[in-house]
Amino acid sequence: MADVQNDGFCSLSPLQLFEEVTAQGEKVRSLKAEKAPKDEIDAAVKLLLSLKLSYKAATGQEYKAGSPPSDFTPVGNGPGSAEEEDVVDPWTVQTSNEKGVDYDKLIVRFGSSKIDKDLINRIERVTGHKPHHFLRRGIFFSHRDMHQILDSYENKKPFYLYTGRGPSSEAMHVGHLIPFIFTKWLQEVFNVPLVIQLTDDEKYLWKDLTIEKTYQYAVENIKDIIACGFDINKTFIFSDFSYLGMSPEFYKNIVKVQKHVTFNQVKGIFGFTDSDCIGKISFPAIQAAPSFSSSFPQLFNNKKDIQCLIPCAIDQDPYFRMTRDVAPRIGYPKPALLHSVFFPALQGAQTKMSASDPNTSIFLTDTPKQIKTKINKHAFSGGKDTVEEHRKYGGNCDVDVSYMYLTFFLEDDDKLEKIKQAYSSGALLTGELKKLLIETLQPLVAAHQQKRKQITDEMVKEFMTPRKLAFDD
Image (cartoon, rainbow, N blue to C red; front, side, top):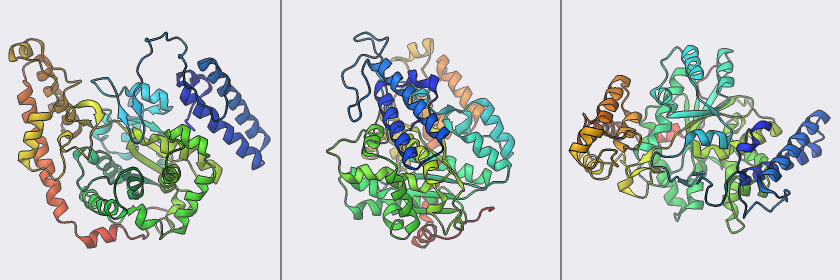
C-alpha cells in the first residue's frame, strides 16, 4: 500500500483511494488472523475508517469491495475542467505535456518524498564524495527511506543495492544506461554489494516472445550491464529463468509475498483484469523477492535482515509500494528507493523511449553516423522556426530533446549552464546544439562498445554464479 498520511488522502484520485482502502482492509484482516497486538490492530482499523471516509468524500459513494469507481466527477472539478492526469505504470508512460511528466504531482500521487538539497548535502557528508550529477540535476528526484539508509551506513550497518532490467530487445539504448550508471556510482561511494535482476519471465508474459528469445536477450543485456564497469566481487547478476530453479529461498520468499497480496490488491495496484493470464498476476511477487537478503543465502551468508536500496525509474514504484507493505508482515525490512525521471524519446518528452522503434532512441549498437543522423533528423527542437526568430526570442530548453540529453550525459555543470544560457538567448542555434550532443554521445557509445567487446561468456557466467559477495558484515 502507498505510504500516505491521514492529511494526504485528498491528494489521491478516487481510483487510488479505492486501492488504498482495499489494501488496508486486507491488512486489517491479516493482523486479526495473525492475532497481532491490540494497539496495532486498532491503529490499522482507524486508518481504514479514515480512508473509507476520504473515498466517500471523493466519489460520493460508499466503498464496496471489488467495485472500483467508474463514472464520477472529482470534487471541485466541473465537467470538462478536470486536468488530464499523466499515466504512469510499469508498462505505460503517457503525458499530454510537451515538457514531460509532472514529477511533483507524481510524488504526491505515489506518496514518496522529494530529494531535496538537505538530503543531497547529507549524502555528500556521509560518503565524502561530490553528489552525482544525476542527483545535482534532479534526474534522481524522489525517494523512500533514504535517510534511514544513511543512518544505517553511519552506524556501520550493511545494506545492499538492487536494480534490474526487462530484456525486451537484444540491444539496449542509452536511456537504459541511466539506472546502471547511477547504481555503479552508489556501489563505489558506499562500497556495498549489488544484485541485478533480468526479468526475462516478465517479457515472456507481456510480449510476443519465446522463452528462449527472452533468455537470449537477457544474456546479451547482461554483457551491456557488465560493460558499465561493475565490481565482479560485489555484484551478482541473474535472470529469473536461470536463478529461480537454483534457489529454494528465493522461491519461498516469492510465495510469502504471494500469500500476503490479494487478487483485488494486484488489480488495484497494477490494473490487471480478469482476462489477464495468471502469470502476470503472480509476477509482482517475483520482482519483490530480490528486496530481501534471505533470497540470496550464498551472497549474504544467510543473513535475513540486510536492508535493500533500489535505484529505479519511478514507473517501477508500484512493485515496491506493494513490497514495502508486505515486508514487515513477513519479518523483513522495507526496501528503500531512489526514483529517476524518464529518459525522453528523440521525438519529445511525452513518452519514454521504445526499444522496438529504432528511431526513438540512440542504441548502444549505433555507429557514429547513425547517431548523427538520428539526432539531426529526429531530435525534437525547442528552437524557433527561422534563424531570425531564434536569434530574437531564443530556444526553449524545457522541451528541446538535445538539451535534455545533455543534462543526462554532459557532466560539466558550468558548460551545461553556458549552453542553456546561449540557447535560451538565441546565441546558440538548434543545429549547433545538436552538434554538441552528437559530439557528446558518439565517444560515449563508442567507448561502451569497446568495453562490451571485452566481455566474454566466461565473465558472464562468473557474474551469474551465486557466491559470497564482498561486504562488511
